[in-house]
Length: 294
Image 1: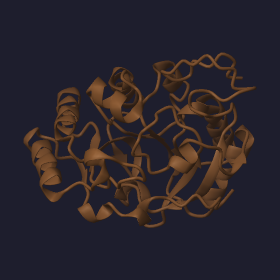
Image 2: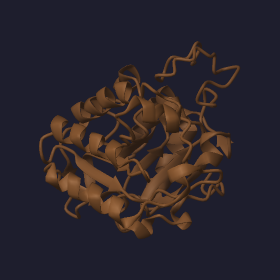
Image 3: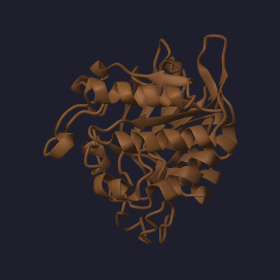
Image 4: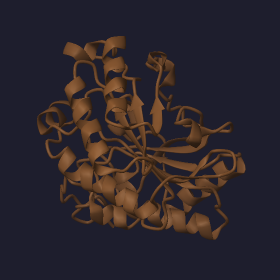
C-alpha cells in the first residue's frame, strides 16, 4: 500500500509502508480526535454537531496553520479501515449529523475502504470530505459515490502567494480541477427537512490579512465557474496569527478588509453561502487535540 506514493500533487514517490511521505504521514492514518464538532457551517454542524475525525499529516505547509500539532506530526492512535469504520459508527451513535473526515487527503484508499465498511454496517448519515483541495483527480475518483458532501478550501489563485504561504506554487493548478470534480460527483446542494445538508459542495476561502487581491481572484473564479446555487461559498474571517508569524500575518484581519471582501463577493453575484463575524478569530475556536474519542 502506498508504495512509491503519487496520491497527491507532491508525487513524492515514497514507500509509505516504511517511511513518511511529503505529507509526513505513514500509509495508515493516525487519528488525533473523533468527537462532535460545533464549529462548521450551520448546515453541517446543526444542533448536535458534526462527527469530526481529525487525521494527522498534511500535504501543504501553511505558515498560518491552526492545526500545526497534527498536520506536522503523528498525534493519537493509528487505525486501519475497519477501525475508522468503527469510529464513524460510534459518532453516528452519539447523534452526529454527519461524519466529517478532516484533512483526509493522505489516506484516500484507506478511507474509501472505511466508508464502504461503515455503510455495510449501517452508517446512514452523510459523509463529509473536509479538504485543502490540493488533490489529484485520480484520488478523488476513488471516492465517487462514497462522499456525500465536499467541504473544500480554495486558498489561492496566485502561484506566488501559494508558494509563499503553503510551499505549493502549483496549488491552484490542482485545486481548481479538484473542486470541479467534487461538484461533478455530488451536484447541487440537497437538504433534509431540518435544513441540514445531505449532499453538495461548500467551498471555503479564508481571507488573509493584507491579501485582499488574492481573495478577489478566488471570488472571480468561483463566480465564473459555478452558476448561482450550484455550490455554497463560505467566506471565512477567522484567521488567527500563529507563533512566529511576521508581516501582515502577525495581525488579525481588520473590519475594512473583511467588509471589502464581502462587498466584492456580493457584487460578483455570489449570495448563496456564509459569512463570519470577526469575533470568529479566537483561539478557542481552534480544536484542542486531546485524543478525545479515540
